[in-house]
Amino acid sequence: MDMRVKLPVRGTIMLALRWTWAIARHHWLFLLAYTLIPGVFMAVIFGSAADFALIPAAAPSASWIALDLAIMLADICVYVALAVLTHNEVEHGLGSLTGLALGGWIGRAFGYVFDFLLLFLGVSLLTMIGLAAMIGLLMIGRTLLGPAAIQVPLFISPFVFMAAYVAVLARLVLRLPTRALGHPMPWSEVWSMGRGNTLRLLACGLLVVLLLVAVTLPVELPLLVFYLPLFPFPDGPPAAAPFSPGAMYEQFAGRLPFVLDLAVSLYFALVNVIAVILHCSVLSIAYGHLREGLDDPYRGFEV
View 1 (cartoon, helix red, strand yellow):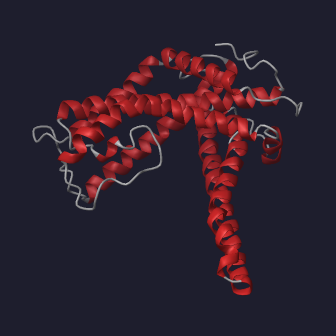
View 2 (cartoon, one colour; view 1 turned 180 degrees about the horizontal axis):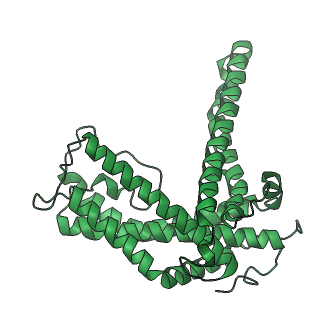
View 3 (cartoon, rainbow, N blue to C red; view 1 turned 30 degrees about the vertical axis):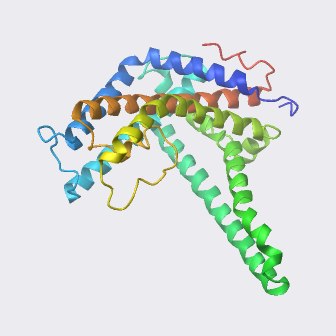
């Protein structure tokens, strides 16, 4: 790969949006089924209306926990299958759910999950060890030099390690498309492939997050404005959660009027599926571009 080749951020995002639309349109029945079935199920099972709610929200029984875990496991299976499908279709072209796009997908799916967990847990562990070592050194410095000498390093060290954590993930996450394609690239080669493009990879990830915020915030913000004052939260207002489509809405699930709860639940079920396709499209396009050293990100990835 030519190390001078730079990932075009705007071109990557625009092409990923085109692929997202193409894949969603090609597999519209799958997306519709995934959106409707869990959305309606969750609204009916956990809905706030007494005529519809089958399980009281304040009943954390063993059966409720088992059902919640089953739903979460089903979600993971769908997301992983959709990720493998997206990576393969961006690489090979649109196909069928049972065709080449998912050929041997079970083995690839397990490998995909393994690499995902290894990547995030491994980098997180190394970051925590490094941060702990840094704090230990600062405490030694505090003993030798006094508290004033370590105030600034102690304040900025968490931010430095968080930046390093995100940067390492941005480089190593390029292995996931190779795992989905059935030919996992060695970690060292993945790291080398992203050299010189760390900030561009981070920019692509940030733009995806901003796009998802743009389509979710107009729905979630009115819920916060109009419904937050109406519901008592004994432990205080809902805590800020890491961003995911519908994260704020989850604070109100089961508390809204049933029809509104159902509509919002369906909307975020669809957005979550689209988010998976968009994220994986960006990864596949970035991987293909850097692997081939292409100056034109559209060459070889026409929709």
